Picture 1: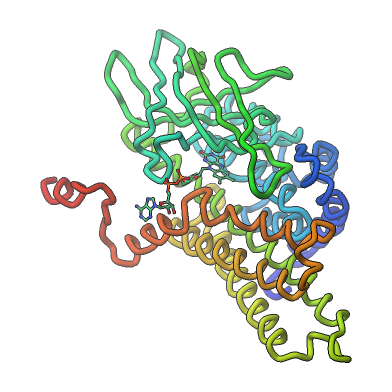
Picture 2 (picture 1 turned 90 degrees about the horizontal axis):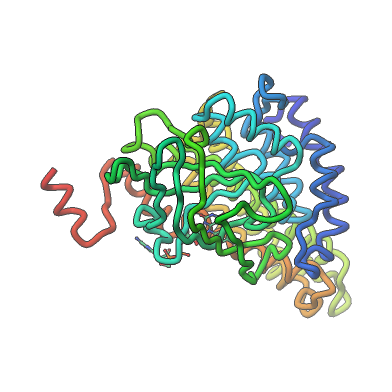
Amino acid sequence: MHGLTEAEARLRDRAREVAQEAAAQAAATDRSEQYPWPMVRRMTEAGFLGLTVPKEWGGPGLSYFDAVLVIEEFSKACAVSGRIAVEANMGAVGAIMAYGTDAQKKVAADLVLRGDKPAILITEPEAGSAATEMRTRAVRHGDSWVIDGDKTWITGGGISRLHLIFARAVEDGEEKGIGGFIVVRDGEGMPPGMEAKRIPSMGLRGMPEADVTMRGLMVPDSMVLRPPGGWARGFGRLMDAYNGQRVGAATVALGLAAGAYDHALARAQDRRQFGRPIAEFQGLAWMLADMSIDIEASRALVWRAARSAGPNGFPDRLAAAQAKVMAADMAIRVTNQALQVWGAAGYSRDNPMERYVRDARMFAIAGGTAQVLRTQVAEQILGRKLPQTRDGFLRAAAE
Ligand code: FAD
């Protein structure tokens, strides 16, 4: 692959090798809808979780770009494994490594290096794209905070140990802004005051999605994540960290498309109709050509976004949004085209194509929808705020 150093190519090849094991269990994981613990243990032993954890915290200190190479290989084989690699390297762990205290960094590093896939809790039933309308509150009582609220579509709810909860911080009866609160599940069950209820989902069925309720959940002040700039800038800073996860999600979409394309390419050469391989029909040959162009273009944007991250920083906001929009839309298109190449066989649950189609659907929704991210791109290329509330422009003009 063009543009990789020897070390990067070695890492990718090693991931490709272990990903064969992920491919072998992907269908069973999809059918059982069980989180693939044996695969998680294998990925942990192979060192693919906590790749981005700095050396001083016991990790190898690799880059977001290195993580992207690993995530693509796993996602080609099994997108659930790919998502595990995203969340054990980016998102919550990235935010804690950037903004956390030493004690918080140690907790997060130890957990992901031992195979935890952290959960990030932002979305609420009434606050999806409008995340800042969240109602979950954390009220300070001396050295502790008490959290009450409802979150939804929380990836890993019920299996994750490390939780990064976004909530409105209330101190001395006054709302300060949105902050991050770290909660660790120690034993088998959920911490007192926290419950998870699984949501049945269309794709990526081995990865639990859950409604999470919090009632009187206690968090010590030492577990409050305080990004620089204080409460007022807290949400923005936490969302900067989320750009890493966006690039990770774009990489899973890319890997899914590339995996489906490989299957389609092989099938087009093997399957014969009218006495010739179906690859000889121009309708299919051009479809395969378009798929390859789509995948390469997405990979270029994903790599550019991943490489935009500085040593301790996060990927560039514009580059991350562009990559996520492109890869998410592309994965829906390409996985459907791959199924088309397979014909009826692709529609059977005995073949992986229908799983690729289902698995690809979420990336234009989760982590910023394709529409909301287009607005983010527009804001940045236009260099102006595009408020989404009805009175947003009036309020901006009055400021
Ligand atoms: P809504 O905001 O209700 O949007 C509905 C539709 O309206 C969409 O098409 C949207 O694009 C469009 N729309 C809304 N506002 C605008 C606008 N201003 N301009 C144009 N169009 C608009 N959240 C977490 O916090 N943690 C997780 O781990 C997590 N994992 C997820 C995993 C999966 C599989 C899924 C599906 C979701 C996950 N989410 C998670 C939630 C996800 O981030 C939200 O679904 C997303 O932010 C969109 O919110 P919504 O679904 O409520 O859609």
